[in-house]
Amino acid sequence: MEQQVKYSDTEINAYILKAVREMGFEYMTPIQEQAIPVLLEGKDVIGQAQTGTGKTAAFSIPMIQKIDISCKKPQGIILCPTRELAMQAAEEIRKITKYMHGLKVLPVYGGQDISKQIRALSQGVQIIVGTPGRVMDHLRRHTIKTANVQMIVLDEADEMLNMGFREDMETILSQMPEEHQMALFSATMPQAILEITNQYQKDAVFIKVTPKEVTVAAIEQSYYRIARKDKMNALCRLIDFHQPRRSLIFCNTKKMVDEMTQELKGRGYEAEGLHGDLSQFQRDTVMNLFRSGRCAILIATDVAARGIDVSGVDAVFNYDVPEDIEYYVHRIGRTGRAGREGKSMTLVSGREVFKIRDIERICHTKIEEKKLPTGKDIVKVKFRHSVDSALEAAKDQNLGGLKNRIESVCDEMGISELDLAAALLYQSMGEEPEEIEEERFYYDRNRRQDNSRREGKGGYGRESRYRGKESRYRDQKGRSRAREDQGGRGRYREERGSQRTRDAAHRNENGRRKKPEERRERIAARNEQGNARTGQMAVLSKNRKRGVF
Image (cartoon, rainbow, N blue to C red; front, side, top):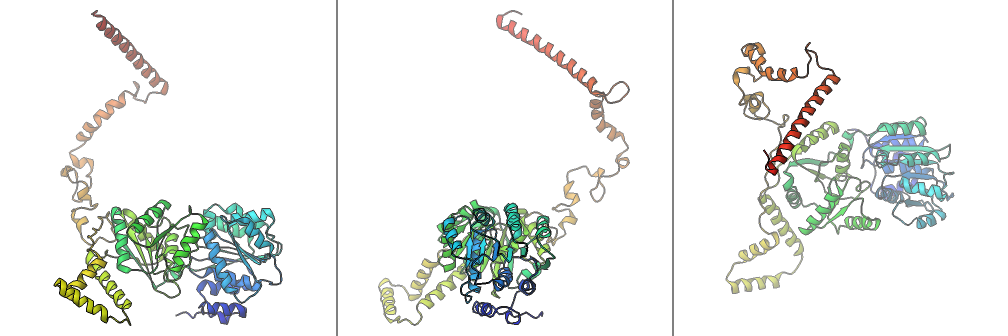
């Protein structure tokens, strides 16, 4: 097993170490082990790592250590794709700088009153965390000055490019002082990212954490084959069976987030939705509910969930298989953090099963196919949960009075205590849910176990494909025989005869295909004949109406 590096074994400031220890961290993550020493040396860095790998600490700790607290001007800028990620990064930096009195961090993003941000900037801020659009706005207003900036970080750079921020990013980078340090972190490395690094970085050190390192062993990954019409019932069954205290559900569209939020609320679940169309106030309200535990289920799109870092997420449900494979890694990275166990469950319909194969291949991981829990399984889980909850509530309580009341009620109604207990449990548990059938899937050659393809009993075998065709024109494997084995060329000539007759009308006396002008003349002559015939028919019709024949 590879030896992990402790924070205390590095040249990190003592005040930072004290705060990090209080946050519960002792050992560095792989990206922190590689990035922090390089950044402390003052070198530029290109980091390829996914969400949940500790990137924020990897670039913020070196930035904080370089800050001159006596200088109240911006010395570090961090660009993030979304306001949620900017707020999350700013909050984590505040925790790290807990004992560095006088160091101020300010998140700036759209949707917030810019006058408040201008007022805060005027009072002195050393680190700015913001979205490219709002940082650009402040640069145009000259409320952010870059003369003292020592380090700039582009976090989730690929996502910022996908959201159309390239021009803003390049404008911001062009306004940095000549002597500054730059760090870029991205989950993927498209050509546009490489162009930015070549233009704005000097001798950058490339650091990569592979997907294999990202996929934490503590995450139990599985998928369920479900017909699309049964997906909602299947999702509720999985929630009832696993009963996570806090869970995330991912959808591919905002519309689906809204519909699912209403559906789950209607079924009695504590659920809230999060997507890009919500106002900033609505987003903050939803996240506060989820963090405080008053909301057990958060339903979100991939973009809206960027930057969400809530501890204690027990399960991630992929209601829709993500369009991009890297989104899958981002999604499951929300659970199983800090050594905790987590579950990732994906609902698969139709040909989406082939996307699961792609994820397994590219991410070097195994996603296990599982059967959906049955109605009886749900009853057992609900029974145990109801009993445990009742015993927990009654723990250390004096139940003597209640026992006497139960005895008197049972005597009056002529029932046993067991009958009463069963009735109360039925009231809290409800009826056994109906079974959900598995979807019949397309042929999957990687999973097929029988020999029906070779035996011609279905699937895509050659014999089944040609069933009903004349067997004398096929060989033993169902392939078309050579033409000479089909009784000579007579049948071929017969089949081609009508086609040749049609082709003759387009050829001249020498057998060559007629030129365009010849074809046009022939078409004009035919149209003229048709027009003459139409005129004759019109005259006859008019004479009939007049009674003239």
